Length: 158
Image 1 (cartoon, rainbow, N blue to C red):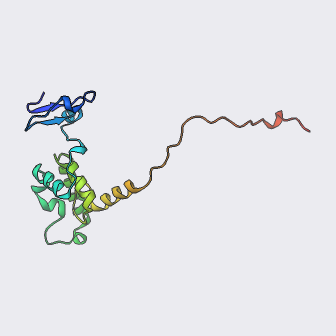
Image 2 (tube, rainbow, N blue to C red):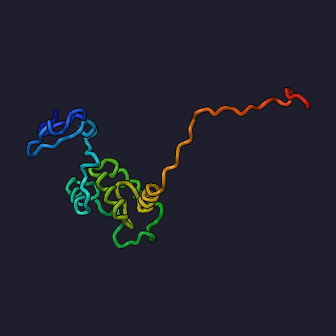
Image 3 (tube, rainbow, N blue to C red):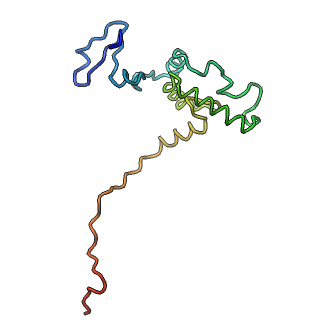
């Protein structure tokens, strides 16, 4: 077990695991994945921003990788260069320790430019639109009874 971390079992109430000051209550899933649950993310924009910046995000190493070259408008950047830059930014985001809070922040702020949690602004807009659409009911895979169809040669002439 990790030092300073208490695990909460789902079959026991949390009251039986009083957290001492300076310890966290983590689920088994959080311990195995190393990622905090979504419920533990801050809800305010300022809290999300602070969580992202405090978690050593990969985007601070080279901001131009995520926003584009300084002094060049996004539409003036050659498409091949932009595609290569976005692909490298996605690779950095894929291993970033604060990708989830960054994505939540991007979904709430709807950025106009840059790469956020591995998504471009157009992709973020698509995610928001997809989340707003009502869910379609699933088609059932059960076999339907066949209507009483009698072959033509088996019909009796009246």
